[in-house]
Image (cartoon, rainbow over all chains, first blue to last red; front, side):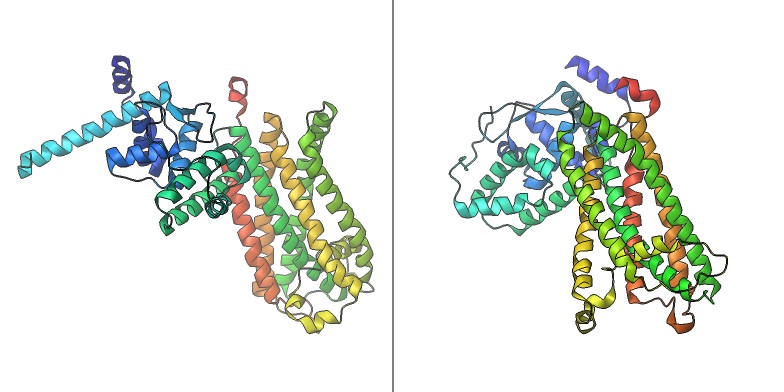
Amino acid sequence: MVALVARSRRSGGASPLSTLGRSAGPATLILSSLADGAKHGYALTKDIEAFAGVRLAPGTLYEVLSRLEGQGFIEALASDDRRRPYRLTAAGAEALHAHLCAQRHVADVGLGRLSGSWGVA
Amino acid sequence: MTGHGAPAVPGRAPAALDRRVRRLLRWYPRGWRARYGEEFAELLLAELSDQPRAWRRTANVARCGIAARLASAGLSGHYAERTAGARACLGTLTCSVAVFLTFGITMWAQLAVGWQWAPPANPATAVAMLVMSASLLFLAVLALLATVPAVWTAVLSCRRGQAPNLRRPALLIGAGVLTLVLGGRHFGNGWPGTGGHWWPHQGLAPGGLAAFGWASTLSVTSYWVHPAALASFPPAELAWMAISPAAMLSLAIGAVQLVRRLELPSPVLRFEAWVGRAATAGMTAFLGGALCWVAQGGPAPHGLFRAGSIDAAGLAVMAVALATGWQAISRARPIPPHAAGHR
């Protein structure tokens, strides 16, 4: 974890997920869902709905899954049935960490300014 | 491991649901279905069990399926494997060139017939014919340059026994070429330019070539919307007008499949991409000439060189084909020479 933080701070510029364009949002949700273990498509949909309140449409889910797999951020696991689970790779964990750190920085700045100017805690 | 149990149980989906899932899957290209089809079908079954009717879900699957098809044609999205992406782009360009040439040769052959009987009075028509003829010659040279290394690679692959999937495209190309050559030569005997007078000193297009181009593209005509006139055609000619598009389709499909399946070495792929870019320049010049004729070229004596609605429609189709080909070839990025050793 310490190594991930150090690397993401060193990288400085845009996070690897930002190269996904409009898929960056769904990609963040998918990678966050996979961060605690492998899941198949339906389990991903349900988990994301539970923690983010967003239900990813099936087409969008697989569009982003294929891009993440192509970039090496996730990998498919062997499965006995037709539902193939996916898991996060080390590159995916690093990309997610860098992206979330950047998002947290934006959130901290925004909340700090809201608190200072508008009194919103 | 998977956390949430999906309601759909493999092998127990009701037939109606199964049919709906299969219909939705058809939006996606074959390659995508081979990789993700089964698991995506499982997800759809589970989604349909949760929420049987949802037009947003259908629209989402359709949109993403079309996006996957465009990506597989090299027209959008990304390819994880650069060489496969470049091959997909070249395949789409091949298809675009085939459509472009079908309509382009129709137009050119019509002008060649007119030129046999009387030189064009309007300079715009003369310039258009010169530009179109030069562009066609340029495209023919490029086609030869592109074909030689591709065929050589295919032959080498076959000799090594590494090309079982090239049999079908080779058969399609062979059948298409054979049909077009035999039919084109036979029906070229009825060429309306026969007996005409060569425009002095022109030597612009050999009569045999013009006759072959005319006969091969007989099916591209506005007679299809005039059934009464069409009924007066000899049955053999009508049959040829139905068979020749099938032959052209067979040739085009075979060529596209060959380009997509042939594992060209990186230097050859870079050369083919260069030829492809030159081809879009040739197509642009041809379209400019055709536009010049349709927009400016008035009819000559006896109504020769008159541009009709079929020519305007042909221009529109050619413009779309050119735009598609240009988009495809601009996205073809074979591995550059300095990176070829570091794949």
